[in-house]
Length: 521
Ligand code: RAM
Image 1 (cartoon, rainbow, N blue to C red):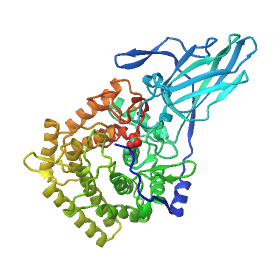
Image 2: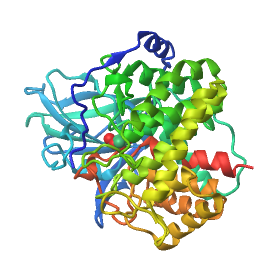
Image 3: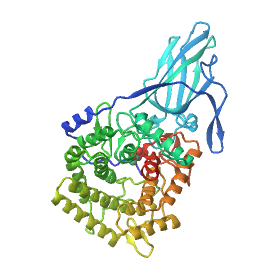
Image 4: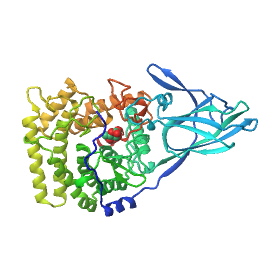
C-alpha cells in the first residue's frame, strides 16, 4: 500500500498568533564536538554486518590513494555536522581528489549505496555523498546534518602522482535536550538502567528544534510520535516548552476545515504536510490533555482546546449508521506497520480514548455542556463497539469486514477502558496467552501493550515484555532504539529496504517513561 494519504484539494490554514507563540519558544541547540573513538572494519556476520575494532585510535589516516578506504567509529550514535582536513602527499595534486562518504547508524548501512538501493521510499535517505576537492590542502565542512555512528570514507580517485591524508575529523553534535534536567534514577536493576540509558540517548538525539521522529529519517514532527516523546519528556528532560511549541505549531498550521495534519515540516518555513491520519489527528487531543496534566498550564489548555475539540468533531463525522468508524482501504489510520493490519477497531478505540480525554479537558475548563456532549459521544461509541466489534465467543475485538484479529485492536480497547476493569485484565491475559492474529511490529505499538499491562496491574508481564523486546534490541547492539523491531523478522522494513529504517526513533524511547512512571521507587 502506498504510504500516503493525501487529502483532496489540500490547503493550509494558518493561525499566525499561534505560530508566533511557537516561534518564540524555539529552543537554542547545545553543541558538542566529538572525535572518532577509533577505526573499525565492517565485517559480515550471519545475515547482518558488524563493526570490528582494528585496535587503532584515530588521529589521521595513512596516505590513501585510489580504492583505499577508512571507516571511523564515533563511539555512540551522533547527530550533527561533520568536518575534516584533507592534505596531499607526493607530487603536487594534478587532479581533483574524489571521495565517497557513507554514514551509518548501524554497520549494515555502510553496505548499501545509493545505486544498490531497491526500497520503496526515496533513495535520497541513504546518507551517501560523492565529493570532489579541487584544491588541497582543504578544510571540508559537509553542509548536511547526519545521524550516524560509523563514517566510511572511500577514495574514488586521486591520481597516480599523489595521495590524500584525512585528519581532524570532528562531529559537531546538536540537540536541544539538556542532560542536567534529567532526574536521577533510584534503581539497582542493571537491565532497567540500560533500557533507561538507551531511551535517554534516543530522546536526546531526536530533540532538535522540535521533537523529530528520527534524526536520519523522517527528521520531522509527527503527531503520533510527539505524543510518546512528550510523555517521556515529562519524566526525563522536562523541556515542557518544547512540547508547548509543538502543540502551537500543529494548531497554527492545519489542513482543510481545521484538521490537524499527521506531520509538519520546519524548513524552509513551518508547514503542514498534506497527509491526514485519523489516529494522529486525534492524538492532538491526547497531547494537549497530557500536557495540561503534566504542567497545569491552563492558558495553553484554554487556547488550544477548540483545536482539540475540532478533531473530535471531524472524527465523529466518520461514523457509519452503526456508530462505527468507517473502514477504508487506503493508509487512513496508522496504529502500526503490521502487514495487512485492518485499522477499524483500533481507530474506534482511539476515538473513545480521546473522547474521554476531551471530556476531562472540558471539565477542567468548566465547560459542563461540552463535557456532557463528549461523554455521551464516548458512551455511544463504546456501546457501538461492544455491539458490533466485540466477539464474545472468541473473547476478542474484531476489525473490518473480514473480522480480523490483531493484538493492537485488543490493546487499544484495553486503553480505551471499554470493558469493565476485571474483563480488561482477562482480555490482556488472553492476548498474552493466545497471541491473536496480527502481531505488534513497532516499538510504538509495543508501547501501547506495555501501557495497557501497567495500567491494569499486570506489572510483572509488562516488565518482562519490556525487557524482552527493548532489551533484545540492546543485545543486538542498539546504541539508540529503533523505529522497527519485529521479533519474528529481525530484518524487516515497511519500506522494502532496511537501510532506510531509522535506528534512532523517538517513539521507541518509552522504556524511560515506564521505568520512571511505574518502577522508580
Ligand atoms: C513513518 C515514521 C514516523 C511515523 C509515521 C506514521 O514515516 O516512522 O515516525 O509516525 O511513519
